[in-house]
Image 1: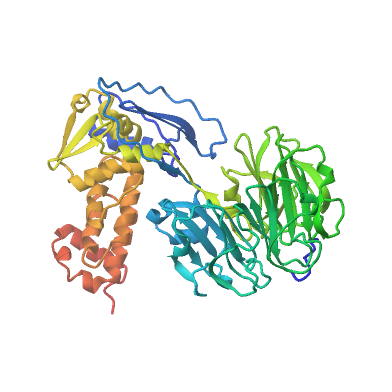
Image 2 (image 1 turned 90 degrees about the vertical axis):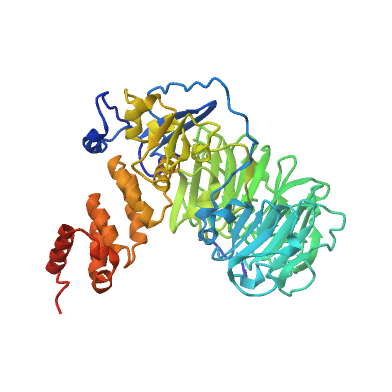
Length: 627
């Protein structure tokens, strides 16, 4: 049992790629029979090569999350261009961790999310969040328990509020406690704190709540803070020259002062750390850990579950070296609620402390007073470990990119490391930790890389790379034959046979309107449709003609969302005309439910006689005309 401390991208979203061949004699009238053959399943994974002028995009995808080997595709012939297009200015794109996996961030719009550079979800129920934008503006939102949002008041907010006091201060480290209280270190080495302060964990010498960020400076003059860590109600700070300062709740010695009195202001941790250079710090609920530049590890504070790894379960009031790791060079140390993990320079993983939920990954639930080597049977070395003082969850990432999790995972006790489909350890805490907080400050690194989906979206209607134009209503839409052939059977037939269109640089379209045809082509590049219901009817016509079933379903969905009394009968007529049975049933029921209003609209009286008779008969069978 855990002893509690006293008082304490693929291109096709959701669909598989399918491949078809049409004979040279096939033409548009044969697309109906092609519709049935579309149902045949093909390879579950593929390698996609798209040549857009001199830009080459490669994608490996499949239904297995990238863990199975992709099938070999048919070779795609290169598209040659005699003269390369002029280069455009390079744009930096975020290699962004998906903050959308945290429920709180679903409150933000896509544009706001795209501006996020750093983010952290915290709080006893993961109900608070802080994020920093590309412009170094700091925003907070959520429950605001104990004033932990730092907004100057105690009001919760679902709309992000800006912390003007921190504007322009680049954040290098952030941590939070259970009160919660928040510590933040800037690039300039300043330390700010706010939130719960019942045990002086803000380090300002009082126990008053910190309703807004305060600069912590006592005993830190001329010290540049590079890392911060929070326990339940105590705090640690690491300076650029390797010194550790601690303050706050100290009932179990977690401040490392040699006593158990609370520490109201930052105090340097000395004793066994005197004269040594610390490279990293971590906090459990009521314990503290430090790793030195030579790979040695020290721990102090509460040790009831063996979380200090010193071979016993007695509290330590000053730093104590982990003798069991003698001879090993530890690179990273991290702590859970009452357990600890260490990663060596050889990629070896050690765990110790509480194990009630299997968080040590040893295969059982027995606490360990000394470090135990786990995942020894794994061939790939460990490159990252993850834990958080407010959870009993552990995670790690291997050199080959595999992510494992164990411990308390959505209520289950996973006693051995379990291989996930995640690409980063952060996703483990978003989806399986309780509470679903972040174990570290997420940072979004920016580079020039674009995913295949981003590349296609960017190149739609781009004159610089296009090799074909459609002319609709006197307007041009620039596209790429390779994309159209890959995404649509109609175009594959058109460009792989002796259709006259195959030799044209401009193709005239007069069957459909410009908004409809542009939306169709954009769908082939993005998998998305953004049209009003009235135009979606035209797109439904196109999707039916081209046997594009998924597009047909999307159009029906748009039409359903936009149905009104005024357009209901027109939509019903369109559904009948385009053989959209599900949409037809939906529109029919809507018309019956609003029969009096619908029969008074112009659309109702403009409908042809046969359909009107059919509607009246069908409505009568449903009892629509009964008193």
